[in-house]
Length: 117
Length: 114
Image (tube, rainbow over the protein chains, first blue to last red):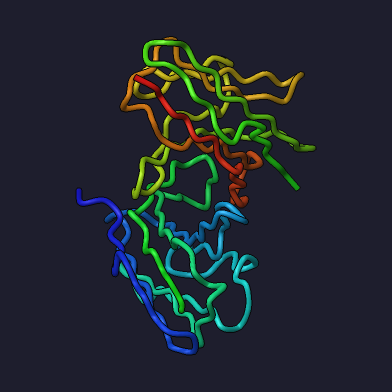
């Protein structure tokens, strides 16, 4: 299995631009997570999907952030408009996630390093 | 709510020496505990997890951790480290039963010195 795939790996953009991050979870996994990692705040959960449905979006910072999962093999995280404080590494993770069991191992992608100038 | 404390932000250790990375958690309910490792420029991967049963959990790459309920700790240990163990290690906690958000600690950078 190729593992969790994220694209792009690096993104540099200017403030005010729209940014779209993409994730392909491991085939057969039912749960998908988007995290943000910064030096100041560590690893934060942004949103969690189970069976393509958003279950917990309490970590989404504000309306500028949105996430979708149109099918079991694809998810996007969009920032519009982007700001310098959004600069971070964004990780996507997936798990088997049967009925939302939190003991399942999460498998992380390599991350997207975002720099907003 | 749950919280995780990793008191040591960095731990330098000589190659082939033992190491212990400390993790303490806070929760009013029973929990599951995890250790993840992050190598440079990579995502996190699971080292080991405690769900129930034996309090000594063995993981990959020779690591083990011991769950201590009375001290609310889940310290990670390895008897002899290798250069390749240089990475950042994250302790994580989630309430047991159903979906609950996994809370990660701030991480401990292990630097193995040749």
